[in-house]
Length: 119
Image 1: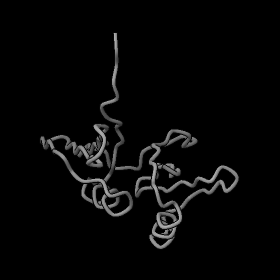
Image 2: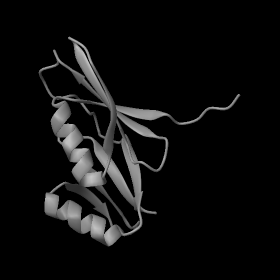
Image 3: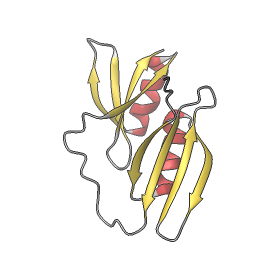
Image 4: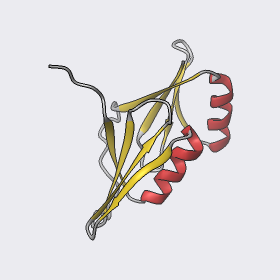
């Protein structure tokens, strides 16, 4: 039996704001969207791998999500780490840096972290 990665899910309080963040910060683009009376889901991709980010908007969820200690994160590789870090610093979204490991993290509008690592 063989399994393959398909997508990772996060929830948001504002679907359009999250899509705009992931497009600007990481270059992800919307692949498809499902909209129902109670929820909406958008799938974003990087155009290079098959892995997608599923963002779910529960229309009756009025308060921020409890992200606990925020140890769960998504990792993104980038060839030019210095340019990426400069862009994220300009956006004001860097939330943690680990110079010893040569990585840093950014936080989206809902508080989810993404790890940025050298490709």
